[in-house]
Image (cartoon, rainbow, N blue to C red; front, top):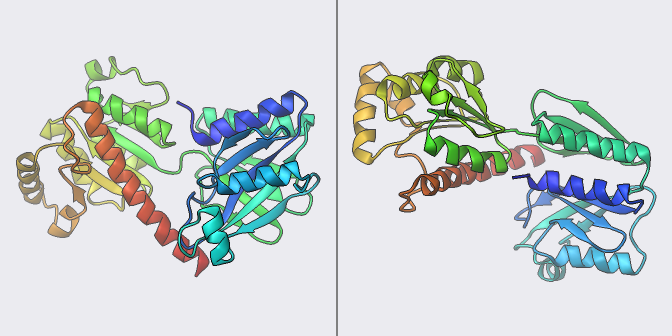
Length: 326
């Protein structure tokens, strides 16, 4: 599956290659609650075809009305503000107190812009983080490869927007559940790494886009783990899972989870304490892993795990937003 960003950029490239003009619209600031997160994009062509989303539909409708009236910028970027009054909140479907700034960038069918959109698309397809810097006065873009993605930033001069996996998911065990989790996570723009020291399990792995590691689990966690990494153990083999957990619980990771029933999880905690993992470190362990939605099949469990990660990421973004605006 392609991410929403990939679909939006591909649509913009397609209408430019047809010789048509359009606009790229990006959520660049949010205040209070907002229907779409920071960095959400929408492509709009000269015929009014919409790709992507900025809100529940009302802001999109307003932009289409502006297009029909000939009121959209055609040369340089502009920032449109929505939700500045209770009436606008009601009109545009913004939650109570919500406000959004939308950057509207005119797109012309020039070779330079087509090449830049193709470069962005190629980087996303290759899961290579890339930064787009936009001069807000001229509309010119600068693209550069980066090591990791940061939160979107904007000032009076430029927009800095990073594309690519920011969060990464390290799965311990190359099995059917790992396959289901990997497929969902890749579609949600995670970098996915699957570690299994067993050659026979690695030889059966077939998910394109996930990176397969032959490292010992603790080495993999040590090498790849950071504050944007989620580690989930899936093998049911304590010799493998506990090795990863012992390392993961001593690092500052975004999330550490382990598959298993409550009884299995209780036994695991006893083992880990005997291996000198402290009570404070054990509190970081999510086990049983995933939200309790009554999941049974591999795909249902994968949904529960990714739902829990989504919930935690939303809380993480709220904390970041406070830090940015404070």
